[in-house]
Image (cartoon, rainbow, N blue to C red; front, top):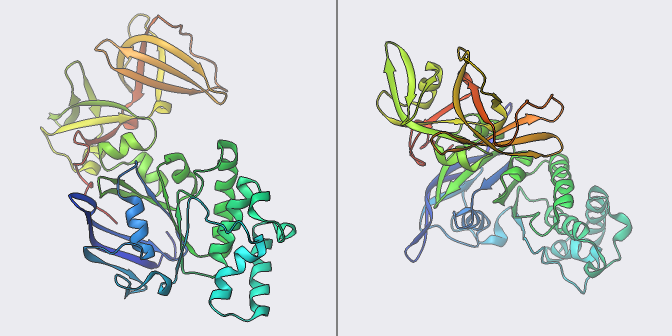
Length: 379
């Protein structure tokens, strides 16, 4: 990213709760003004890492630095960091104005400065006319905006958000993604947010760290995580994935993935990118939108494609796309997606079909969910 400057550095952090390792030698960097996501399933350690950034938990070892200053043992209220909780934690007996002003009053700021800042963030979140209302008279989206205003009015260097959109219905979540991104761009401070929702992370984050069992599997932009996953875990966690597992073999300079049923061609550029070598267990991952489906009629010219055969089980119309589910001759289920604007392939449920993908559309990864190539790169 152009002009990227490190703001937060997490160095080899370990955190245990009894026999559970919530953070397992975690290292990463977050940039000034970056929208950064900690992404993973429940129990992966992302909320623990967020709480350590906030100062609510202390690492057992390692360090957390902000602008080069070690924050590891700095109390939460002394950090230039603020946190927005999933529950919003608004004071029900206070007005919107007083909720937002509360932290500034605790700091002892002058009344005029409090008035200026509160009015400024009320304009920013688009709710100046609701200053005198109480939280009980607000919608879910309005409460979320007030909680956000209360967090940013103190002008922290970093805002931490724990599943900020989880309490909203789907339509409002989609609207608030755009709103959060807009607000982050306007205030210019770093946002670090926790989510288990990959769509949420990919649509808002500049970069994301995918976590599993206290470890970071990969850090990258949404495009990098989707198009060049570092390992099988990331490939399957980020978006839908059709996975063909086998062994990587090189014969007379041509690379193939040899499975129990087939051999699929693999570009040498993918082999170089993945860091895998001849004879290793590997997998080719193909995204549904990169596959084609057609009837099995006569000889197939497979020159540009890898192909597999099976039976069409299901067709689903999704509005903007059609999704096809195919069971291959060796029992694997595949998902194929085509744009709804294109002419539907001439196939029917129950028919034999041919599924193919361009050789360069397959993503080569280690067959291990943890291993292979760049899996250990954390920043």
